[in-house]
Image 1 (cartoon, rainbow, N blue to C red):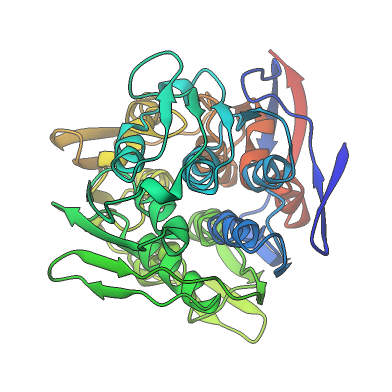
Image 2 (spheres, helix red, strand yellow):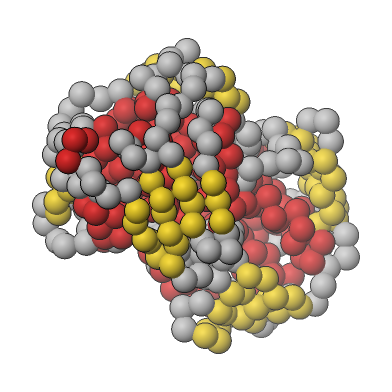
Length: 436
């Protein structure tokens, strides 16, 4: 285990190759349905990675506190400190997209690559936008996909500061452009076309930029964001706990017989879009209450069915699908377009794994809207494949409250929540490593 230091921040970097997983699994159980205790999930990697790009654009002069220990953020720190030509992001999609824009605009010559799955994840929208500004970005292999070759950027040749991008694919493309926009000679006017997905993540980006002194003008009616040329100010920022990570504790509370779980480090005025789970929670049987330390989760009566649009919060979809299937709630889930291009095809993975338990996820509208059909849900020592996807492991793990189950490649959680299994142990879950 190596240590890297950024400014006054020291965190651990785990040597983990995301293309190579072990042949191990966890046998997971929980002998009591009553769950009490307190845990502190990791800091938000979404906030951390945005703040790190801003930090780099100030010459590494900001004071960043409570950065995430998730592998994606550790990878970002490692690469921002690296002088190597080849920058390997492993399986970190956010890191790939943010670093592409950062290197292209800051004049950093580099080859950006990643795991085999990363080389299947599209990046054409971002590359096209950067090329419109005059950046030199090329595909090394397959058109539209990493690896990428980034060459020097001549600011004196920039004549265009207005670009259009589709708004319905991934907010990470948009955020990548917004973060570097103030450093462009003429700033940037960004027009979003069509439906805007994950809007809270765009608003998080703009709020963080404002914290570091950058002013932007937004016209959501015209779907236009304007950022003049300006400099980031050197500032201090403390990262909040991650709301996507919090969702697994909402699941544990929902599936328990009795719950009193305090998750630490959350704010009622959070910038993170996944905070919307507090609004959704009563529908699946959880009452959240903010405390002076974070959030208290307790049981309440659940609905028998509900509909939710996951366009602003796609990372919650797997957790909610599993909760509803296990609790017998028919849930119609829309806004799932981006799940096909995540760490795995999350729609297909959910459908395969839920069927093992007697449930289903039925397509109502192609690639966008699905209904969770609980069926005769039964845990019965089922084996859960994780598809090299951290959220598959963590979304299904709370089912151990209903019976023993086995989770493949438990180390995948290092991507976003490295101490997830240890936190489960703190509240009474038991796990043993087994060989496959």
